[in-house]
Amino acid sequence: MLKDIFSKQHNFETITTTVRTWKSTGEKIVFTNGCFDLIHYGHLHYLAQAAALGDRLIVGLNSDESVKRLKGEQRPIKDEINRSFLLASLACVDGVVLFSEDTPLNLINLIRPNILVKGGDWQPHQIVGSDIVLKDGGTVKSLTFVEGHSTTSLVEKIQKLKD
Image 1 (cartoon, one colour):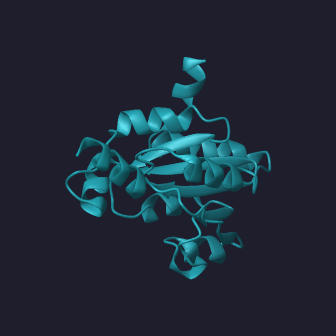
Image 2 (tube, rainbow, N blue to C red):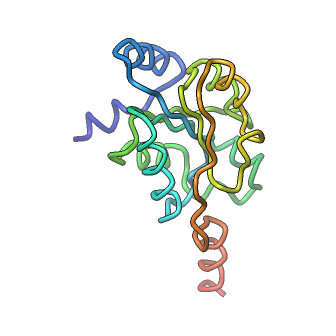
């Protein structure tokens, strides 16, 4: 079981080889990205939705440095090792790749997914890499956002308990 989880964790080089293999057998690659700091129902619902759109789901995971730049000095709460391992443990996730830039543009350009998705708070034209995927004949989707479930609300709830 541990071997299976570790085998889902990739760097830019290994994901390129893996995606090439998957595509050679005609599998459709779905890509999404995020910080996934405190995994909650909204994340799980979204990842399951994303996985159902194709044959393989790859999650681009913001590195610790990237999360700090995007979310502030107090984040991430869980480090990239924990976040990556947790995502790779999910049955609906086929690959996890850390990236340290603020956006996954370089990773999307490398993977060239068939389907690119983000949560419902993003319009398809706002999704980084949508131009690449659409140019390749792929699809860009904004998936349903599950109201009332966010990392920010979890952090606020924990802080209230502390006070």
